[in-house]
Each structure stands twice: as C-alpha cells, then as structure tokens.
Image (cartoon, rainbow, N blue to C red; front, side):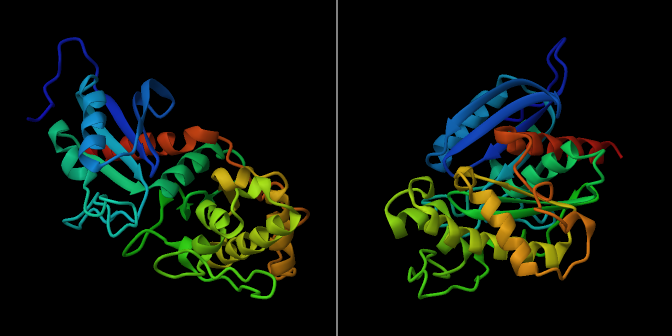
Length: 304
C-alpha cells in the first residue's frame, strides 16, 4: 500500500538510508542540515532489514524523496530496470535485493548511489568556500571504495567506480600475501582492506607493527596516485576503520609524494599533503548526510 497521503498538519520530509554491510543508518529530515530522527539497524537478511527500515520510515511518512547511499556493487543507472538493486556481491543473500522495490510504497522519488559517492557528496558540500571544486572520497574498511564528485555531481559511467579492485604493484618479497579477494586475489581490496589485513597478520592493522603499516601505506599511496592521475581532484578524503590506525594517513601522504615524484606541478600537491589527503570532516555523519543530499536532489529534480 502506498504511503503518500499527507496527514493533517504534518510537513513532508526527506528520508535517507546509509546502507552499510554491517549496519544501516536511517534518518528523516527537513533538509540535509536538519535531521529530526535517526536510527541504526543491523544489516541482516534483506527481508528483515527492509522491514525494519520501512517500519522506521512509515512513522514519519509522507516524504518528498528518499535517498539511499548503499554498499555495492549497486545499480546506479536510473534508466536501468534494475536501478537501486544490489548486484553480484559476496555478502550472503543480498545479490538481487532492491532498495527501489522496497521503497515503492512511499510513492516518492528514490535516488540511489554508492555509499562512497554519498560520502563524497557530503564532504564536497562541507568544503565549499575552500576552493574545492572536485573531491574524491575513499573508504578503507571492510571493503575499499572510491567516490568522486565534480562540480557538485557524483560521477559514474556504465557503473559506479570500482577502484578497490585495481591491482597495485606488489613486492612479493616484502609482502608474500597473495590477497583475499574472491574475484581478483591481490587487488587493492584483497591486500589492504580490514579483512585482508586480519587474514594476513591475524589482527587489525592498529595492533600490527610499523612494517605492516608501511606495506598498507604503499598500496594506499598507489591508490591516491591513481585517483590523482585519473581525476585530478582538489582534495582526497580517506575514511573507514583501517584509516584510524595511528600513523597510517601520514605514511600514505609520504608514499603518494614519493610515487608522484614531482610529476604534477600543482600547488595543492606541494608540502606534506596534510591539507590535500585529509581525514573526513563529517566523521560518521558523511554517509547519511550524503543520502539526504541525494534525496534533496531528487526532490528538486521532481519540481524542475
């Protein structure tokens, strides 16, 4: 049953879902800066998870629009019949799960993008006034993903970007681990994600020594150089649980500088890169704020 009818005296609002592989953050707001209610839900089986999301949202319906910033891979092409659907994923039971279908009952526009694109959009907005036209956001945690915003628009092609699955150069003598990705083995995610680190060393990076940090920093430095050469962003933000490791972001900056070797003569790439390769300013709110911005954009597009 569609939940669109306006209740007497109730203002229409925006809904947002930050869909993570471990938890979902669901929120309702008047705009991206005014969250009125928020709830965290565990990511279990799709039917159970969707039921909990709908139960929360239904208490605040109707909505002008709902935004979803989801773990992937997810179909983000709005012209696709599978728009808003989780594609082939190693997460059990989630391949084929559709946010668009689950949210149809709210009878409003639903905008779906990747979780990293949502976070990138939120951080790009927060950086306005600092000359940041283009921004890349990388998360290094359970998986590795990169989102890019250019001029206020998230970027994608036939699919959202999958930077976590490029294959960095690996010195097998220094790092004999052959990777943990079920699709690509020693891709970036298979070498530097949280699960890959634990599989290799039996503990999180924060409990490993400086040599382990140096190995992971080299892989992430290769990622940053690839982002720079492909997109030339004005800033790169590095988030996710692995990036909370003491000394890691500083080591990634040093690796990036060494690998670039002075090739790009841009002022932003001078010095120690502490302003260029930065921690997220919004912390754990980046994803849900990005989802609200997606909803806001969908509402504005509906009215144009």
